[in-house]
Image (cartoon, rainbow, N blue to C red; front, side):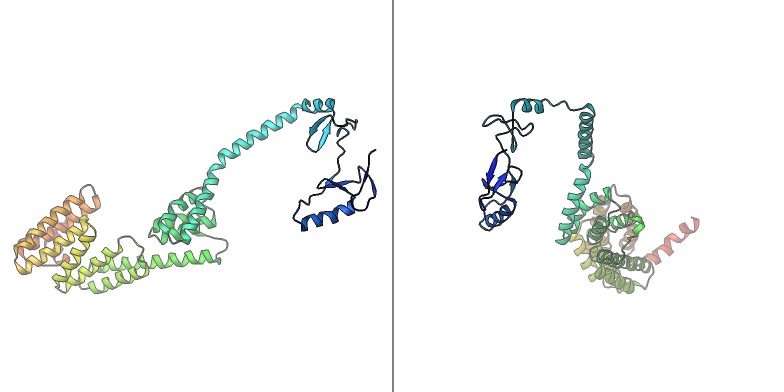
Length: 355
C-alpha cells in the first residue's frame, strides 16, 4: 500500500487517510486548516479524497502511468473495456426509455403553463406601471388557463376595472368559485372588492340617470347623477360624451339652444358617430326653429344624412336614429320645439295603444 506524508504535520498516511487540496496531501485535520487558509487567500478551497492513480480504480491492479482516465480515477484496459460495454439489463433500458417519453410529454404539455407564467409576470409588471389595458391582454390569457389562481384573477380583475372593462372583470371573478376567495382579508382581495363596488355604484347612478332622462322636468337631476358617476369611475368608455348628452338635456330644458349647439358641436368634433351627428342635427334644428335662418336647417339636414351614413350596418344605431329622426324633422317642418314625451303623446300614443 502506498505511503503518503501530510504536507503540514508530516504524519505518514495510508491512501485511505489522505486528502488532496490544490495538489498537496493532507491528513483530515490539517486539510480543514489548509482549506480555511486557501479560502481566506482567495484560492480554491475544495477538499477531495486522495486517489492513487497508479492502481486501477476498479480492481486495484498496479498500472503505473498507464491505464485509461475515468474522471478522477484511472482504470486498467480490461476494466475500461468492461465498463464501456457494460450489459445493462433490459428493465433498466426500458425504464430509461419510459422516462424519456415522460420528459417529452411534460415538455410539450407543460409549455402552455410556462407561457401562462410568463404572461402573468408581464401582466403584473404592466399593472404596477399603470398600463392596465396593455396588462389585460396578457392576464386574460393567464386566467383562461388558470381560472382558480388567486393572483391571476385578482390582477386581471383589477386591470379590467381600471381600463373600463367591467364585463371581463366580472367573468374573471365569477370564474373563480363565483368570486369566493379563501383569504378575503388579503390586501389584494380588499383592493379589487373596493374597485368593483365603486365601479358598480357609478354604473348604478348612470342607470338612475337614464330613467330620469325619460321623464320631463328631471334633466338637472339626471345630469347631476351622470357627473357623479363620471367622477367616481372615469375609466368607463364613452363616459365624457354620455355626460355631455345629459348636459345637452339640461340646456334643451332651459331653452338654451346656443349651449345645446356648442356641446353637440364639440362632441361631433371629438367623435364622429351616428349618435353625435344626430345630436348636432337636433341642436341645429332648434336654432332653425327659433331663428328661421335657413343655414341652420341646411346644416341640420346635412348632419341627419351623415348620421344615416354612419349608422349603416349598426342595428342599434339604426334603431336609435329611427326613433330620433322624425322628431328632428317635425322641428324642421313646423319650427315647433316639443319634448320627446310631448311628441310621443301627440304622434305615437295611438300606435303604442295598438301594440
